[in-house]
Image (tube, rainbow, N blue to C red; front, side, top):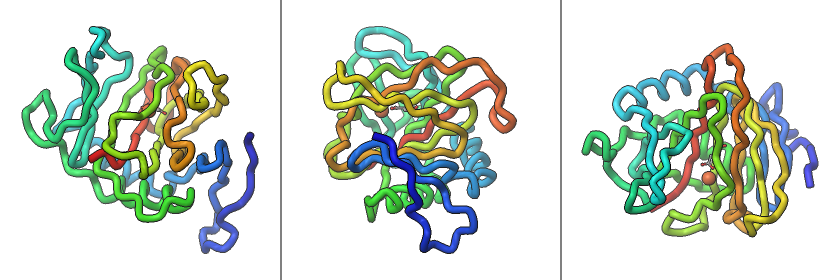
Length: 220
Ligand code: SIN
Ligand code: FE2
């Protein structure tokens, strides 16, 4: 299923973003973050200056190919004892940096456009992919409740996003994601499997040789 139509005909925006429906309650909003990009990238640098990206280890002992950090009240972490959310950055022992206002307002706006009013993220996971890095198919299941959607923002190099079903073996849709695109899935689609194919080599004019994904969640 992949339909394209204009959800934004009644807004005052001069160039309405394209909305593609990828599930009953799942949407890709093309270029949704582009108008806020300068502010967003400055805020991202500030966050990463106090909570540096690092390669976390899975419970099985493997180092993840993505480098990870977080901001907001809760940050997703993994180590030998499991996957979970933590209010402190294990690398510094300090609380995670506050979620920048531009992150929060963008995530809320994207969620609203996708039909999820009143989304209040308390966690923003930052994943940095260099060429070759990937994310295997998984469900986002470490949150306390599943009522809130997942809101994801892609920055930098293109990615092929896999959007699957409710079983790992369900054949996923392949959705190319570009700088500034946002994906929102929730409601009946909240527990769909998803992942990212290995990032292809390239240079992005703003971010260089990397893709950065921000995932906004209500975790606590
Ligand atoms: C994730 O599911 O944690 C990341 C998805 C993405 O990088 O687009
Ligand atoms: Fe995920």
